[in-house]
Length: 265
Image (cartoon, rainbow, N blue to C red; front, side):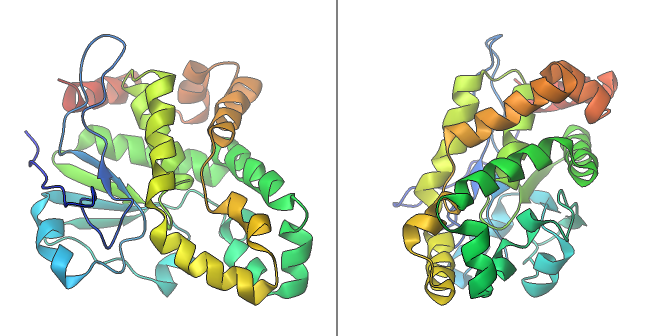
């Protein structure tokens, strides 16, 4: 059984990492439930406060899976829970535009071309397509699922804001566990309530780039259409989600069985 988490008055398990949350409690179509305290998703874990450190170390996390690129990991290295294994499992080509939007925003001319006049929304749809088909994404998400299936204890996976790369990872895991699309989308959209850290530095970048907030805002929130586009791209490329799992991610039947056995009750 997982450790029972204490929720703060503001509803966050870790206020200094507001998008840290347990994926347990979701019901599957077959009437089973995802176990609490074994599978956590989060935003970046480099700035856990002293006030949150005891709680962070107390969740029993023994695997930290970092989905960021090596540029992000080097710039803001994670604070690893006491006793946990750290694994760098990038899901983006480190040189792809989707992995370098911060650098794009830092250059005024490039920022206007990349994100001005509604381009940010198109940019985000491109990011989600890449998370479905790029080699780095296929390798990284396969690794994430295999680690979640193997255990034997709790793990957390994260990116920077904990909403896109982590969002697709959570959607993948919950779908593999049999959670219906409506609940998967609801969990995904919960990230919108937890972007205080992201908003702080994105507003700074917006001011620096000279772009109005409405041009940048599509990159700071999740939208059901983004997630729908990823699932739609799965169908376009692979024909079905099941084919994506087998032919794209190359996950074995044994891994999927272990994942469900370990994480469902």
